[in-house]
Image (tube, rainbow over all chains, first blue to last red; front, side, top):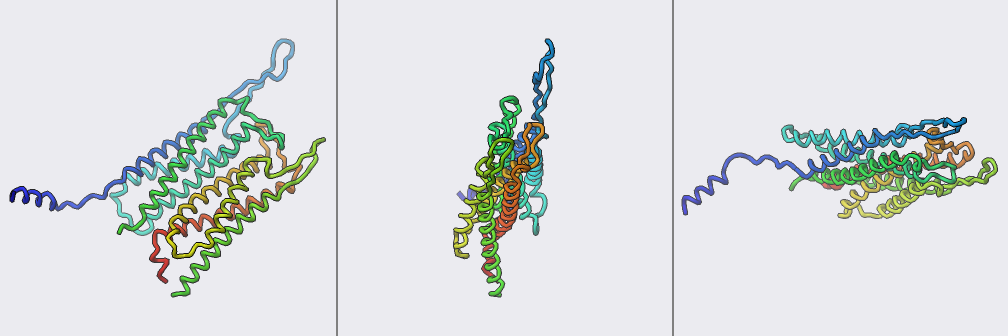
Length: 191
Length: 166
């Protein structure tokens, strides 16, 4: 009995201080957010479709015009690509900070900077999303009042790929929101 | 020392009132923008309900107006300020996305899109375009005020001791 008690005492007073527990939840959420924003950026940036239209027929040879739909034609999509690119870069940097973080000392303003940057990238991604959503809705349905024709019936795969990028961006926004709330919660002084 | 705390409270209340006023004016200016014009042989009326983006802008700003009005009456020491910080974040996001969407559609209306054969409409309805621009500017001001308020409420939640001391 006495020897077991001595052993138990030896184990509890080991003398090595506990390392601060790394928060794996936030890191895995940031990795997911990085994947989502990066895929949204890439899918929209590589969105291109060529299509040949027959314009007129001279004799027996049809004259075809090739029209390309690119994402650069619309400023809203350019903003979408830039906003999601910035958000994915931010997620990448934050993953690095979270993994290498505990080595450095956090003093002064630095702990506050992380939630502020998280909020800024969340707001930016949300803005890019709003613009691109309504722009693609305009492309899909047109606007009869302003005499704007819809383009999605001619450029099917362009519209579908844009829609996929939008869905990825929506998922990224939800993840970024959860990450922001968690990193704000981490600022609370522990009692 | 009491006066600094009082000044803080008054400043905060003033900011909230300004934000409420800004979103309210954005709603009013956008909702009263309509203009009739005749293009070629058609009678065209430009209203904000023609585009879902402008409808979204009006709806989002009215929701934030109601929220801003209700939060003016929250007593400064209550525990509900944590909920206010969370709802502030959500409503700031809502404001951002609504302004961005309305801006995207308004840009197409002003400059057109040559690749999609969309002609600009601002030449035929200039008064409508100017009013929409005004509503967007006021919305942007409301967004900036709401971002400041968001930082303020997060600070208030995390460091309540500083707010109670002088």
